[in-house]
Image 1: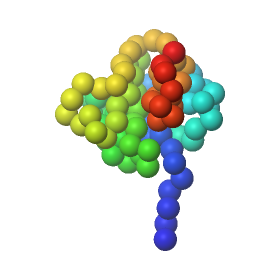
Image 2 (image 1 turned 90 degrees about the vertical axis):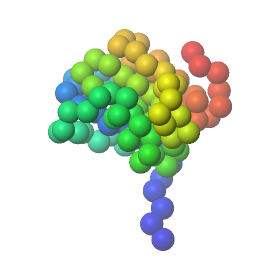
Image 3 (image 1 turned 135 degrees about the vertical axis):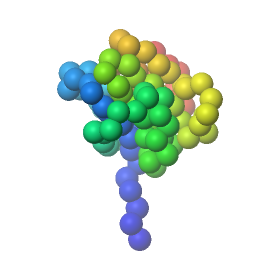
Image 4 (image 1 turned 60 degrees about the vertical axis):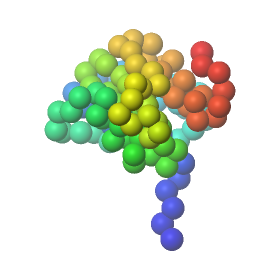
Length: 106
């Protein structure tokens, strides 16, 4: 039986490694795992987050397109995301992890 480890999936397209590094640092601060998927095909940041949530064993996904970040969960497909922003990347990573742990956002 092939079981994936519990992880947040991040789908990134046309973004800098510095932005991604900040998001990942936030997730690591909360001691959760993640998997990054680099997308070649350009997609809307909301689409990236939705697809990432579908692939996440924790049902939470992060989409990153250029400087924009969206955090969503599978249950919110087609609705407003949990979080979005174009700065405070570490905080977005922290809060994505805190959502899973059912802890208050920072």
